[in-house]
Length: 171
Image (cartoon, rainbow, N blue to C red):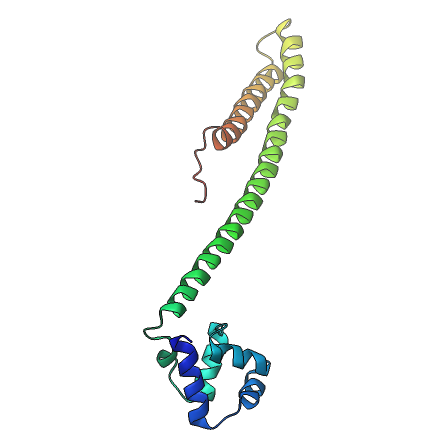
């Protein structure tokens, strides 16, 4: 029997409760109370808190200087950290998937100015055989330059985000 099991049994007897009465209060089986008091298992933190209320004993009396309970807390902590890391990995994968979708959308949007370049090139080529003083020729040339600049900017943003990793990732 470890220290916790002895303390639980003494506290129950001190209050004059049967194992069944305590089990009914905690909504567990009588066998669970017996197992806790015989040292075969330990109550979890939630049930230990309820026991401290039922017995009118401070929770500290049950956990203070109890090495086995410290080991359980450490084990629970490690389990929590493991599940937290798994959750964090899933969230990171979700963010990466969203990032991929947004990058595809940006690349598609980057192609739109290129589609604007084709008619501009055609008009510039058609007009170059005529006069260079035509307002349509100059507006086409400006439109072509703006389309090229926008296309290059969008492609740069996409490439710098993905391949150069300029935006910090979540660690």
